Image (cartoon, rainbow, N blue to C red; front, side):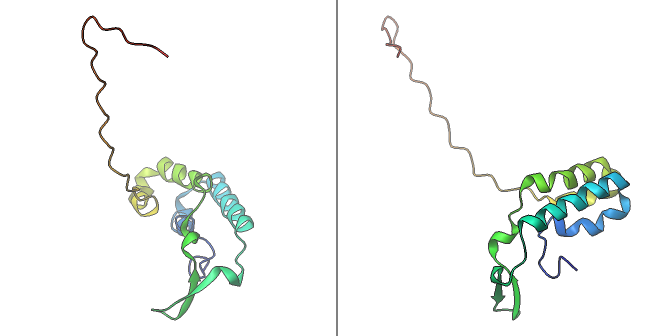
Length: 119
């Protein structure tokens, strides 16, 4: 229900799919993270925008940005239960596209016999 109403973003919105496989202390930690998110992001009407294709109100684009501290316990819970929940990991934590590294410029060679000033 909270996912449908855009009250919590992914990956927090998928917690319902993992709760049945977790220990009580893991469930408690995840519920605390959801509560912390809800305290920081109160769902006021001004945060919703009309989606022209579906004629429904949805949260703005900044909604999907979640503090990694609030998703770390979920990530660790999935890793602790990888045999039963591992298939969900790529869905909840997709690999971010990292820009290609620029080549490192070569260090210029100093001709033999020449001194280099050190600053």
